[in-house]
Image 1 (cartoon, helix red, strand yellow):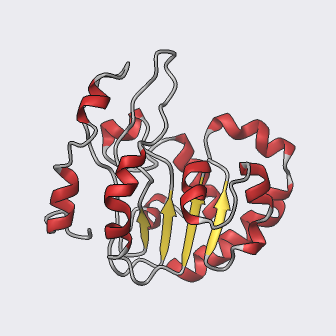
Image 2 (cartoon, helix red, strand yellow):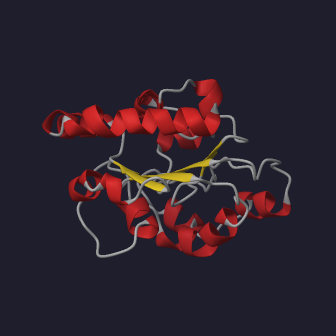
Length: 199
C-alpha cells in the first residue's frame, strides 16, 4: 500500500461493490477509497469510515476530528501522514453517504469482510492499534460488545497492543467533559507510546 500502484491498492481503488448503495444515498456519490499504509508502519489507526470532507480530499482525518486525534497523539500532520510510520485503515474505505436527515451512514460491513484481512496481512510490523469508535472496536476487540464509554474506560486491558479511543469528532466534546479521566490518564499514555513508535 506504500505504492499506490501495487496490485492490492489498484484492486481497492477499483472496488465498486457498494456503488449502487452509495448512489442511492442522500449524497448520491461514487466510491472513493481512502487509506494509507506501508509494510514498515508500527502504528495502526483503525477508524470508522471517511466523512464527506475526506471523501473530497482523499486524505484520511483531514478535518477537525483529525486535528483532535493528532493532538491526543502529540504529533503533527507530517508525522501523521507518513505512511511508513503510521497506517490508517478504516473499517470502510469509502464515505458511506448521508441518510435522509443528513447524518453519516454506518460503514458498510461488506468492505471489512472483503478487504480487511488482506490489507492487515501487509502490515507485519504493527505494534499498537488505535481502535476508534464502536465499529472498529467490535472488529478488533474480543469479547461481548460493550458501549464506547465502558470499552474506553477498560483501556488498560488491551495495552500495549490495542487501545480503544472514542471518536475524536466535535460531537464527542460533551463526552470528553463528562469523562475527564480520558485526557488525564489515557492521552499521556498514548502520547508516550506514539513517541516511542514513530520517533
